[in-house]
Image 1 (tube, rainbow, N blue to C red):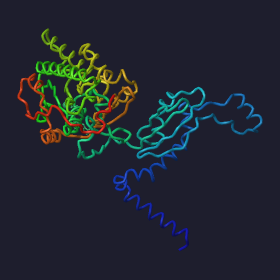
Image 2 (image 1 turned 120 degrees about the vertical axis):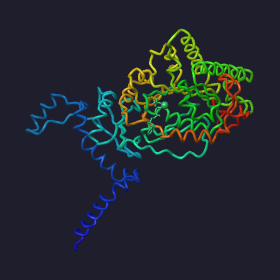
Image 3 (image 1 turned 60 degrees about the vertical axis):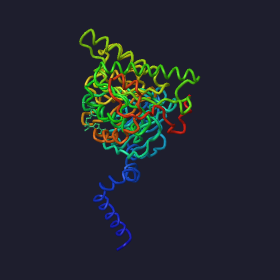
Image 4 (image 1 turned 45 degrees about the horizontal axis):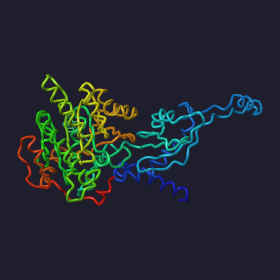
Amino acid sequence: MNLSASLLVVAAVLASGLLIAGPALRRRYPVAWWLCLGFPAASLRVVRTWRPLMAGCGLAVSRKAALTVVSGLVGNGAPPPQPRVPRYGFIRPTRGGFWFLVRLLPGQVPEDFVKAAPAMAHDWEVHAVRVTTPKPGVVHISALAADPLKEPRAPKQRTAGRLLRVAVGVLESGAQWVIDLREVPHWLIVGATRSGKSTLINALVAGLARQRVALVGIDCKGGMELSLYAPRLSALATNRAQAVKLLGALVDLTLDRMALCRAARVRNVWGLPDEKRPVPVVVIVDELAELFLVANRSEKDEAQAAATALIRIAQLGAALGLYLVAAGQRVGSDLGPGVTALRAQLGGRVCHRVADPGTAEMALGDLNPDALIAAQSIAPEEAGTAVLASADGWDRARSHLVSETDAEAVAEEFAHLTPCIPELVEAVGGASVNDGPAVHFERLDGDAGTEG
Ligand SMILES: Nc1ncnc2c1ncn2[C@@H]1O[C@H](COP(=O)(O)OP(=O)(O)OP(=O)(O)O)[C@@H](O)[C@H]1O
Ligand SMILES: [Mg+2]
């Protein structure tokens, strides 16, 4: 057998081996698979389709008409010069996609490329293409080969991690979705029924339960959702009357802490010495609308009191170690002016699939119109998928599937960490779940005092 015949045989064996073992290898080593096979093929597609794609999307610029005529005259029937297309740089791989930079032609703006992103995704056979502007005159085009949110892998959490920081899921980029309450202290989570709100709260509570923080629940659906974490909750209100009292007690707590900081001449609780620093309190509200909906006059006063207290907690809380996570199915401006005022204080937004555009608008509309469009295209089978937005931008993400049983087990396991805050327990008229006097806590992370 000569050399070329043996090479052919080797190639045939390799190809058939890949065909048979391919799917399993791809599942087991997705990154290696992408770098060795997927990425070269996708790069070829980019190179091959770039010119027609730019022309098809109106991003090619014709040469001057005069030049075309001259070239026709002197070129002896040679084809006229091609329109100019934007120049792209080196195509670089990432763990599940690729990116490159493109220099804009005169007269072009980044929005033209944003509009062309769906066409790019189709032509290059990738899941999604994102366009951003790193500096004037240049756009950054990044592509994701597959949707990393389809089967997000939940890492096993063994340690408590940094205080008030929890990895709750994965971002579309493949990076961890981290909720850091010290960076963004208050959150609004919206979504239609069975869209993944409780699962996200489960993931957050499962992470926070391991840390020395007080968790306080307000669940006016009779406590059906939040009572799961009862052993780890410092207080739980299950109807609006209780909620109003509990929120009032939380406002008082905020004012006490303010006096403490003033006396110590520090700007926030992180500036206090360890032995004096009060425990952080995370207030979780499930079904915000239950607090705001009114049927008669007396309910109106109650709703107003709840709204005012929530807004005050959000306004003053962050520096004083009070954090707010509020979830709701339908959070529209029809719930009253309190909701819009509260929304302005909740800087972190998570919008799952929603049933009405008003709720998506409430969650994202004031921050980012592109995020609003992305949220409205979340399909029902993608439960847990959400669009996150803050003043810095937006992202798609999916929470880790932390079931009710898992959250319940974590709450039970870490019940001994539940701080006892008597004022809050009194407000809901209940007995303390835990008698531990741990209202003060030791520093868990080295940089706790560095916050300005
Ligand atoms: N991140 C996720 N990954 C996979 N499946 C999920 C995820 N989040 C939610 N689900 C699925 O969707 C179901 C409903 O989710 P969840 O209970 O969190 O919805 P919800 O928004 O709290 O609904 P409701 O408003 O009725 O309380 C879950 O039981 C689970 O099967
Ligand atoms: Mg729920």
